[in-house]
Image 1: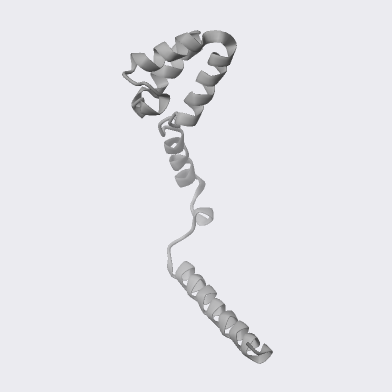
Image 2: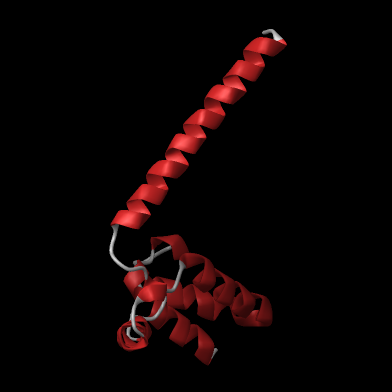
Length: 109
């Protein structure tokens, strides 16, 4: 490809970018007030809602890490018993809804 063709492509891309930026600016201007323009009372009303969201879910990786630590500490048999208690042969076979209970049992070890 020649340099002129590359430069023409760059110019075309820049025009497309400028059109996209203009479209975003127009959309923002036509919308209602933004969060920074809203009164503080409305923003404070929204803040408690964020706090009432449910706790973060416990992931398989977190459970695996805790159980691995317990196993390295000499509780391998107990860890295996916890996994089997939930009807699984491997940790990955345990239902994710049971992860909090598994963690609680592991903390007791």
